[in-house]
Image 1 (cartoon, rainbow, N blue to C red):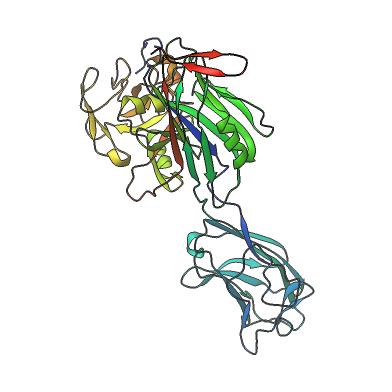
Image 2 (image 1 turned 90 degrees about the horizontal axis):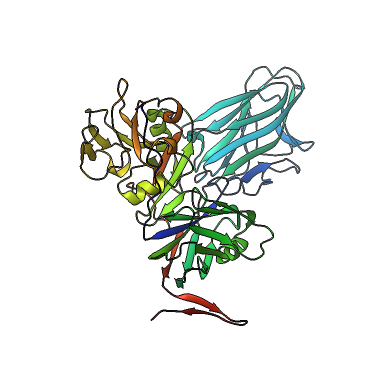
Length: 480
């Protein structure tokens, strides 16, 4: 591995260009919701959050009745008061069946005595203690998976014995902060146009975005995702968009439309984004894929791709990290590159380079995809100059199994060979330009993946026409 390589060579030029419009969210969760009781009235049915508890508070224990104004447990001075409660408990249930995360917070204050109260949550089988309240303070607790269900519950019970008649503890501001999965949006677009060299053309003629739980987002990424020619192809935002700014990334062929802004504002910005080429005689067709989400979409595979920067990560750790990622319900895995178009998209036209889902750990020289739907497929046999069985894109002089053994595939750094090609490395990576920089995750094709409708596609056809403009009208003039 550690020997001089070829100088950089120009990026391949393909006939078809796909342009991806990606809408970025801070995270794939909808807005937070709350379930709360602030005890501002003498009632066990208070619901002070954005959602309601499933039931009212219910007391139990010797001599206790469910009465918020009397007994050992009651609402008093806008707080839940506990006094002389050796055998008394109070419980309330809530439905967390579709919740992704939940956090419980509350305040407590012991005004007299030395007694304590246990906070318990239902784990699907029984109530178990998650904290003991003693003295004065606040509690914050993240619920685990067993405590998040359709019959979740919270209970307060004595954690000590021998309560005297005056020993008192108050609890206030019981709050569950919860988050639900983000519902994927629906994107519908249209456009079938002719592009004349020397002009520009919008990427779409119509675009609508509907989303059941969001009305705005933070940024839109419009990327030329297949066949991008650096230095010739260009995306430009035209017109005035007060809440949106644009930045062009020539390496990725990507235009960032930065908000935050509403979907309606981003729709106008997409319609005002134009494609142009500085080439004297470009040819072929351009396909525009408009997709909601931060990962990049490749129309030929129908999959999504994401580079994750993590300098120094090992291949085995990258595999685990990729497997733990999801994208609108799609399962992630270390990328498997089975065509030149896919290899160019994930390699030469990427923000960084990193691990991919191939190794020859099982048998030296038998390079296989070991992740995703292609797991177990052998694509290369041998070392340098070996046999390509399906598709491979090794850098010149690779795979060479250098320096004590290199069994894991990594996209080559741009400074040491063919841009976007592959080299073999040890599990921990190498040094300098051969250090691991991160990993590439692919989403799509896994059994059980949901069907998403977050992509719309439009096209343009490049013609030998030319533009003629008078003071009022612009004409596209065809040669025939």
